[in-house]
Length: 197
Image: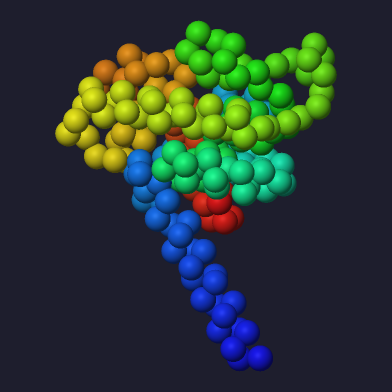
């Protein structure tokens, strides 16, 4: 019986070590963020904002995200992006797959949320869609790296998130690294990381 407990303990440590080292673009565990703006909170029926709002929205999306966790882990590993960041973007963009997203319909290549009344109410999230979202993020990060070669990996991640939907031109200096999308996604990612993503 003790050998079984030892094996289970080693597996848990291996999984923890693996999940904590994923990601070539900053360490989300050490990043500070103010979380979602009050506007984001209000849009989702919350009377509060900040990290608390981001965490609540991620918590609501977690059951849907967990269904796709293996796929998000695979996509994260393929692009060297922390799976918690991948899941947080999916949470922010489509409420964890609760709202259909039409990928590639806006000029910058990022998804556009579809109106369920027009496009049906079947929630879904697919591997090509998650891959496209993650590829868009890594492309933005690489653009920021080229423009600001002396920045840290954490700054590259923040810059990539701020440039995610508006393009790299949105980030002109380190003063532009605190946008609402970035702050909300990072707070959601930190929450999801603590839940095994």
